[in-house]
Image (tube, rainbow, N blue to C red; front, side, top):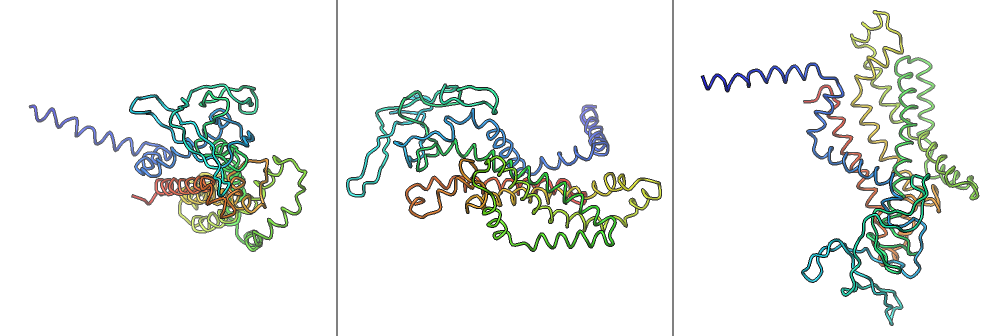
Amino acid sequence: MAIETLEAPATEAAPGREEQLYTAKPWTLIWWRFRQHRLAVASLVFLVLLCVAAIFADFISPYTPSSIDRLNTFSPPRAVHLFHEGAFKGPFVYALKRTRDPETARVTYEADREEILPIRLFVHGEPYRFLGLVPTDLHLFGVDHRRQRINLLGTDSLGRDLFTRLLYGARVTLSAGLVGVAFSFVIGLALGAVSGYYGGWLDAGIQRLMEFIRSIPTIPLWMGLAAALPIAWDPLFVYVLITIILSLIGWTHLARVVRGRFFSLKTEDYVLAARLAGASEYRVITKHMLPAMTSYIIAAMTLAVPEMILGETALSFLGLGLRPPVVSWGVLLQEAQNLRTISLAPWLLAPGAAVVLVVLSFNFMGDGLRDAADPYGR
């Protein structure tokens, strides 16, 4: 009897699980399969945390991106410590001593082990507007000292905090990639669907347009645009313009993918049955054909976001995209253009490392979403 009572729930649990799989919605099944891809889940968590930090960059950052400290130029990153001489002191940083080499006249910094600076939470510092609306001076963390500062990633040639500028730059770089992909997604999906569904002269015209756009050399195009844009224009307007241009150039790959899939799907039995049942062309496209190629769309979109980010970073690094006072990762990398600066302050390459991590995270997340959305996958 004891054996029967133990086996009964097991035999009843399996049909319940199968019933959940059969009755679950498609997006629920995608999420269940996506959770099994640990690297993709870790990448998703990292990107979400980075987006949250970018949105609340003015609160999380201890300073403002334009705050200059001329006595703290090319300061190395500050390590956070918990113990001082064997005693627990909580999170703190050591003060820095600024000296000058008598032979090379180079400014050097050494940690002052006798003076510790405790890291405080919710400190009052430089004023700013929270989310551009509410004036305040409250920052997430900082140190209570008039001259010493906490620079987790060091400073640049003007003494500006690199950690602060990295978070502010994430706003521009990530938003340029996501907004640009949103525009290119709408354009590429619409034109690719029309081209693959109707074919004929309409398909030929759209394909010639795509080939013309893909044949334009990117660097000469951006050099011409950089020369045509007046320097006196508002940096925000230039940012919006560059985002739109990136999206107008980057929609061709997605359109090609959608067009090829539509050519193969429009002859499927369920599509023909929907037409014979009297379904409108809009319903056939949106309800029957597009859901069948979800994995292809997701893969194309997740690969397009890193391309947009790399495009903005490369153009701004070359001086053809965004310009100061706009803060983006490409603008921050402009200070790392010469070998002398890199040898003296290698921490200025932190924006480049951030770009690599974000691009890899989008690629890993895209692989997980593509595998989870593939109806023929295991």
